Image (cartoon, rainbow, N blue to C red):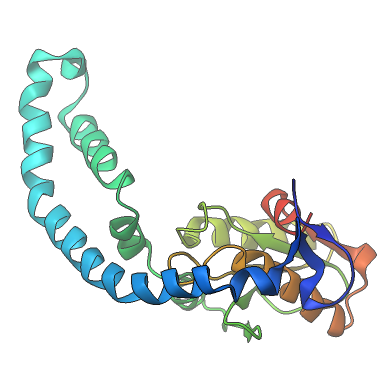
Length: 224
């Protein structure tokens, strides 16, 4: 059963028998978070180091085995690329290391295209990243995917910038903002729902009318 918006308070996302604040502040969640914060740091370092060491040997091994498998019809470049993705896809820490935090990716992207970054912090640590100039008349709020594990890559930012420019050519001026919500394991679920709620509240306080706000598919799921 999805959480339901009941009112404008922080407890608006309710679960059966327990408000969201009660869930986050429960002793079980607090104990598990404090215990895992230090352990995960050490384990993540070991994971990244291990993957970095075995990665070239794994890729070369797959390349050698490809001559005797169904992959023999592929080019050597395709074999190596597929092997690389197969290995790192199951290791969230390594992927996050490559992608980097969403806010850092955003700053680098704006620098590459010659646009000043516009970042607005939210109360609990999430951020709103504006694509192009900030507008408060009509807004698209984009909440990226990634299973709450991964940040947003620059390709999505570039896509929305292209969309924004194409709309402007048709005299349709729309603000587009990306929600850089908190990720696990640093922020346990349902912290991401709180971030989505705070993002909407922030936009409404800025003067944006609800009827002129559009959500991405994932964003609708989070605030449903």
